[in-house]
Image (cartoon, rainbow, N blue to C red; front, side, top):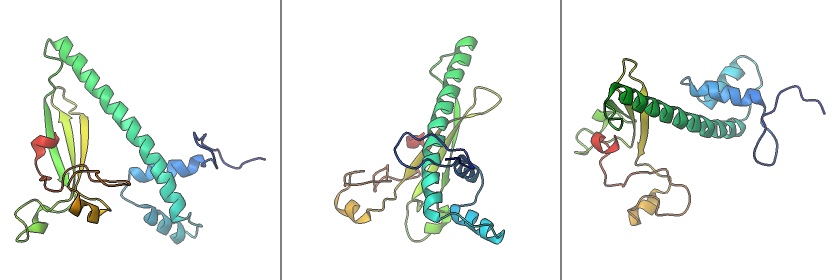
Length: 182
């Protein structure tokens, strides 16, 4: 059988994904448009749009691959910084960084409701100060959210229930303790 498109070799059994579908998902990771937004663009252009489930499936595949490559890239940058410190005669284990946290919810959204940070998710980026490039050397995602909220009311430990848990800090921990997450 002759295909009109290139397929990506899969590690699992089943149908292989078309290379163009994965490349669309990689492109979507670089812009602020979701799978629904892509469907709207296709439908607005009178092009048959792919189903939401197939777009989500390929997005999940691509996300894992991009995350793996990012981890390898950040690890290489840290190794390069250690090498630079050795050549300068500095301690190779000390990397001067600057860090900043970006919150999912606006800080002012909990005014008058809670004395704590009202954010439920946060991303911390650490940039190195050893070179003039100020490259990103580490990223940390912090989340207080889980789809099994009722389980967390009785069990306070992170990932103490069955199934997937997206929460990676305790419910009583403050999400804005930047020195802890860095």
